[in-house]
Image (cartoon, rainbow, N blue to C red; front, side, top):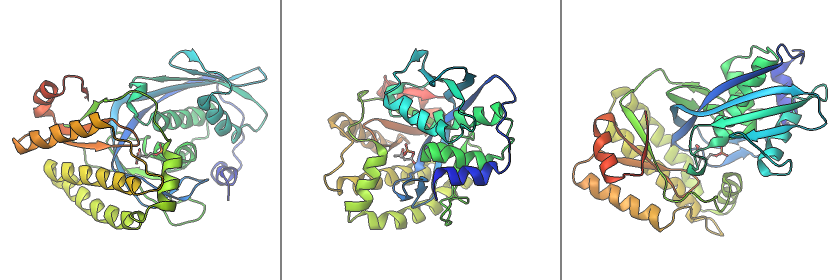
Length: 327
Ligand code: PMV
């Protein structure tokens, strides 16, 4: 099964006649509290485990798409045209190839209102916004589950970026991945805050796709990952239902550090943290000892995402003046 097969299953006999000339859609970025790490299918981005994320509200990507009468696509990121052979353009162009029924070309403008350097899964909100825009351009009228599957084919974590609040990506069991998509959780938790703590804005050493593959192939600890996720899932769901922030913080931080443990034990080792990351962790642990309810999570990069409640925003800002708090 390849991506085109899945797209045919979803679009069926929908005609790809554009209903509008151009359109733009927004999708929020998301931060996983229980991480997606490792694929059971590298082509369809099918995960080994479920994952659960929190959306970043109005922080994310607005993507506009229009059909142009040209030989090639044109890609803009934050108003800057991207070279046709840049990784950004090549990735988007390959994705759009899946939908080009009449050899049409597109101009795609992606506008991010999150710092590009924050390692903030800009590909997640970018692909989710692009899928929403394609759905509108061609008036497919797909369900959110179908849109989530299409977004997953662009980037795994993008399937969780279609929703506000908490999103649960169910790994699914089918080989075609038609049961692997995200759904929103009903519970809202408006007091929950995420703060972006950027310790290093440079490009990551190894992309998450390669890092996942290497971890699955070479880490002996990876065998425990699915067990950890299954346990953490139960705890996180209870914490969300009970609005128990300390449990949410503990299980999220533990899950992130366990994911990094699988990477450190890969070969060659993958260490995304740098000295500043580790110093920030110690500062958080010290503040916790003093009674502050502050936790963190970390993705495939050196930056941390702080987890706390709205009531502690001022104190967090005092200790980490550079933090960007998402409301
Ligand atoms: O979807 P990708 O390939 O960008 O991978 C995301 C991986 C993590 O951010 C580390 C975890 C997650 O669930 O978002």
